[in-house]
Image 1 (cartoon, helix red, strand yellow):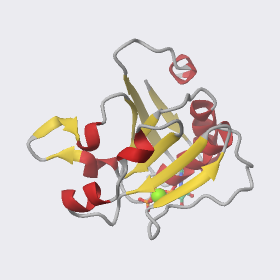
Image 2 (cartoon, rainbow, N blue to C red; image 1 turned 180 degrees about the vertical axis):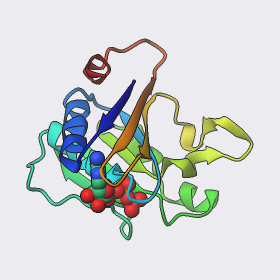
Image 3 (cartoon, helix red, strand yellow; image 1 turned 60 degrees about the vertical axis):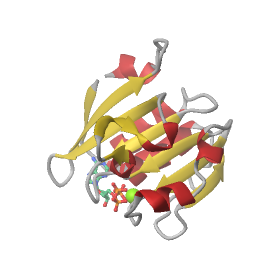
Image 4 (cartoon, protein in one colour; image 1 turned 180 degrees about the horizontal axis):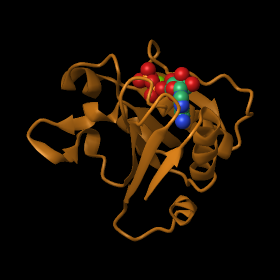
Length: 160
Ligand SMILES: Nc1ncnc2c1ncn2[C@@H]1O[C@H](COP(=O)(O)OP(=O)(O)OP(=O)(O)O)[C@@H](O)[C@H]1O
Ligand SMILES: [Mg+2]
């Protein structure tokens, strides 16, 4: 479940492939350093969900949550500027997460609870996690993991 991307375009393609197979209620958690490619992957996911490829996608760093109209509503969340659990709870994200859209969260590291490396805040259980590692200027290693009670075949895993 690892894939190396050699360019931003390849990352867009990966995202597109993932986005095309998503269903209502899906939650995608993105982990990785500054400039890893989380927003590029999100852009691909949006295209895969039917959003106009020219639509302007950027980290919702100031607004925290952006909503885009795809085949399903897409909620793009960036937790970079959040630094306390209280702030996360105050965002009211549950309303978005447990709804009929697709939610993509950058800096999902912030959802890990200090006491348990396994549990995530906001009652998040079913999810797809994507870890992105910077290998070089143009290379990124993507690791995809899905957490569902029932095995679900995601085409992205057949690609890898
Ligand atoms: N293979 C690659 N995939 C994605 N981006 C790449 C790749 N190689 C180089 N880059 C560059 O890395 C940067 C990734 O930016 P992006 O905004 O997607 O990262 P991010 O993880 O969202 O960062 P931030 O934490 O600031 O939100 C861009 O400048 C892009 O051109
Ligand atoms: Mg970003």
